[in-house]
Image 1 (tube, rainbow, N blue to C red):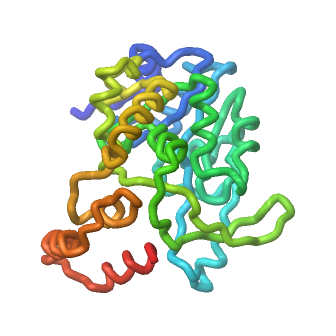
Image 2: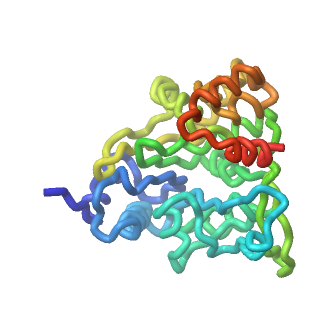
Length: 296
């Protein structure tokens, strides 16, 4: 019979991992790896809130979708606001629904936060902010990151390291509409560096080796990685100063890593050969056109 995890089970696992009262906690969660949870994402959120207590703060990536420009008429009607659902998964959307949630004011990289510092951090993350400035502030405050799930990408601080080091890429030509603080509808374009989700996990062994990992244990059936954000950022800064290509993934058909960064290999013939080889069975040149349009 499949085990069903209760709130008490999750509280026990979180405390065993090291999560404690008063934590300023950045969360990256994939619910499906935890297993069956009685009450789903709400139960995990309730467990986390109980463990960090009234002095703690939970912050989750809760970014909204963007579209290739120019927007269609239908896309122009999708106005991002504090309650716009996120593509970041069930847990992020459960946080968005919470009555005590604050949403950062950035039009696209919208974090969701609950707790003592939620309002302060979210109101400081504005349309004029960089996409990951909120995480940079959390590093300064000696916050911790909790990653739950096998395929969750990184711990968040790699984005901060990339920006602080001034690593640049050809930005995708994408955006969405949003309502500013005056109530005016405006277009927001992506104007910050992202990165490849398949490359960031390459740092994880270094976090273990260099003392950034506070705890590593199971949350339900999922792997839970609990790290110091200040230390993971220090490790990433050191590594990327020596080797800016370290965070690029090993897939020679990855357009982002192979072609878009200033320090990408940019071997066009090799890239297109591997892209065609990888996509031959489901080959659709319209997919390649969309890819190139979004990055033109």
